[in-house]
Image 1 (cartoon, rainbow over the protein chains, first blue to last red):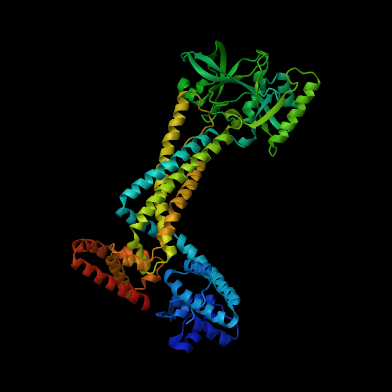
Image 2: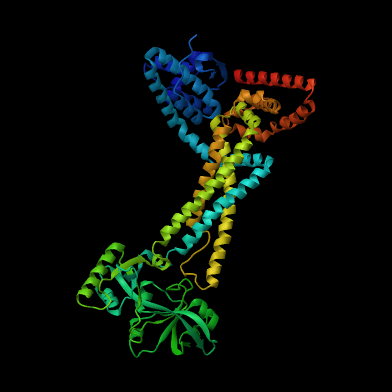
Amino acid sequence: MGEFEHLVLLTILQLGDSAYGVSITKGLEQETGKPVAQAATYLTLRRLEEKGWIEGSAGEATARRGGRVKRY
Amino acid sequence: MKPPPAPPRLATRLVEWLAVDLESTHVLGDLQEGFADRSEQVGRASAHLWYWRQVFLLAVGLGGPRLLLALSPESLLRDVHLALRSFRRTPGLLVAGILTLGIGIGGPTTMFGIVDGMFSRLPVERSQEVVSLRLIDPVRGGGVVVTWPVFDAWQTSSSNLAEVGAYRRDGVAVSGSDISPTRANAAEVTPEVMELLMVRPVIGRVFGVADKSPGEPLTAIIHEDRWEDWFDRSTSALGAQLRINGVEHTVIGVVPTDFGFPQNHEIWTIFRPELEPEAGPQVVGRMRTGTAVGTARAELDGIVRTLAASGVEAADGARPLVDEYVLAMNGRGTRTMLRYLSLVVSFLVVIAAANVAALFLARGSSRTSEIAVWLAMGAGRARIARQVVIEALVLATGGAVLGLTITRIATGWFGATLEARGSLPYWAEFGLTPSVLIFAALLLCTATIVAGVLPAIRTSRVDLSHAMKSGTGADAKMKGGLAHFRARRRGDDVLRSPDPLGARSEGGAGDGPARGGVPHRRRAHGSLRARELRLRDRRASLQLLRRAGAQP
């Protein structure tokens, strides 16, 4: 597992049930003190999911997201 | 409450295309949320920049694999399978489309095949170096006879031409001890002609310098086909006597079937200018490797001017023409003209494809409910558009196969007709040559684009809610499709597969309720009960759709 994958996994554990793309990226930025590209988060989440470390589930949709669902 | 700022539409479209169908929903949601946050914190311009940066990074990260996935043989095969399934319901469109595109592709390809066949290269190494050398009168525009002094000067003085040879064609009467008198196409050639054309005899030898010496016995070379006809491929042919125009010639060699210089000739004798000094020769040469036609022409022009200055007859005022041999034999400028003509004829495929596009559009309006099910199952617009383009590709491929069959038959017939008339050049090669196949492939691509793109755009613009409200059986199909979607969703995450449509087709559940829904609607049509049933159906499907959108 890569360093960034490790960080993402720790952030997910920290966030618990409220971990989704935006919150994970914000958490990573807070932890590392550096800007993190949301695209990097998605690609890492996808890799972690493929490796079986995490599992996603669809969440609620909000107007701020253009009515699109979250994926926790 | 003020609505959140909308992110750049083009970038959003790009993410929709890049991200796997279901992923695009939450990825776009996250991006829009981030965009809204940044718009409030740092302003719209920075938010735009941030959004585009994320899309670019996603494009790099997802685009490559996605493109590979889209072009993978498995993915394409699955799409083709789906397309064939959809054509099974509309066999008329399949037949009409293939016939239309077959004619649209076959016509121009046949034209191109004939032009390409007539202008094939000489079957000899570095054939582009073999050139025809002529003289023209620049004032009158006609040809001028190349006299022997001019020929000799070109042969001896040119540094850009490796070999220069002379020839003259004629129809002759041939007979022999076991050969009944017959007519044949013959050519008188100087030994250099055989050398510059790199002729390798099947048996025996080709002409040498000694053969043209006065006093030497007259010799002849025959074509492999004649060797088979007259001597049954026996080596006893060498040394046999042939009476050509009443003069005895000794056969010294047999040349292979792919040789017929100057056009479709089968007997060659040595050119002896001393026998008919007044008859001017036709001249052929081989340029040195790397020499341009213009350079060779300029040099020959200089030689002709020198000869004219020294008072040599027939050189005064004449200008040399140097052309690639095949171009000169088919007529200067003819190839360009015929290629333009082929291009114009190629528009036939655009017309044919436009007709097929109209058929697709007409079919698209009756597929609204089907497309609505696809959308409800999570297929993006790009995925639907891709499927329609694949359907056009399937039709175009069928059309190309038919078109190539037409081309094969038509060019074969053309070649056979020319051969029967004795005017088929030996370099002509008709049939499905690589260049003909490439041309047909280009037409196939054009047909796919013209026939598929507009219907793809129109079909993918189906409004889900509108499709549901229109009472065209969509309700029942939607119910079936959504029920199947939800059932599969519970079992395995079908929408995460790159092909949600494939999942539908595999199960076939979407078809079942659709077929069941139609008679139900027909039974109920026109009665109060029917209206009640339709309203109930519509309400149920709307609830299903709402739940499908809000729940995992």
